[in-house]
Amino acid sequence: MDGAELIRFDKVVKRFGSNTVLDQLDFSVASGKHVTLIGPSGSGKTTILRLLMTLLKPDEGTIKVGGEYLTHEEKNGKLVPAGEKHIREVRKNIGMVFQQFNLFPNMKVLRNIMEAPVTVLGLPKDEAEQRARELLDLVGLGDRCDAYPTQLSGGQQQRVAIARALAMRPQVLLLDEVTSALDPELVAGVLDVLRDIAHTTDITMLCVTHEMSFARDISDQVLMFDAGRVIESGTPEKIFNEPDNDRTREFLSAVL
Ligand code: ADP
Image (cartoon, rainbow, N blue to C red; front, top):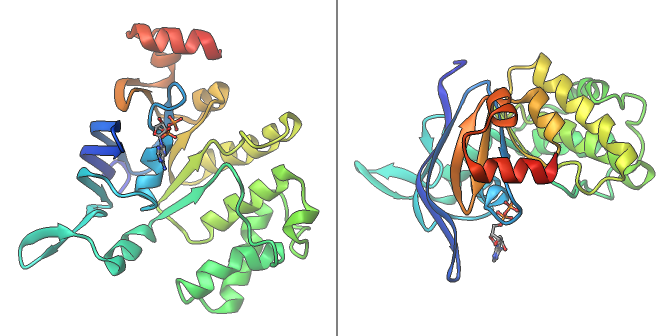
């Protein structure tokens, strides 16, 4: 499966009122790859992740995940807008970690991670618990199973959110500026966990980040966005060391 196309956007248009945020966007992500979206604020990066999570719907174009249309389904040989059931099925392949950790405040850490595997996937509780404990070990919080989210630092909460996303065994992990709400001293711990996951698992990652050294470290491919279009893409070495596009150069000189 490695290398097969996992995500495909075809001529995707997204508007908010008269603001065309994504303009006939085409791009794809191969299975097992780590792809980072960089570019100025407001260029449409988060919108891409929200479309994949079906928190938004495109105005035009199609999105496929794992070969299945996310936005549409085939009925009687025709492509029609996807129903809720179809969307839920395709979305099971996708996990997302947000800027704000969005943990369930009334549940202990272990329950936070077990909840969706039990209720959505129907996993037996003991299996879900074992998986949750393994994931908490992976993110370095094996000893905090019984804590409530408010008893943890922001960095620890974000690591729980990462474990929670992974508990659904998604094929792709979407990461939306996952360190931007954190105090600076907590950023490194979260990025270290993500580096570890990137280097030791075969999960596909699609990240939006302002952390350029992290992007350089984990990415197979970097996509430079401007005004809803990919204006340049390539390996991190290429994009960070010898970009072709003037806008990429300008952007990088402002953020590096
Ligand atoms: P980025 O992630 O690159 O900073 P976003 O995808 O968040 O960019 O936003 C792209 C543009 O879409 C911005 O101009 C933003 O103001 C606009 N936008 C995003 N979400 C909404 C929304 N729910 N309603 C109206 N405008 C939005």
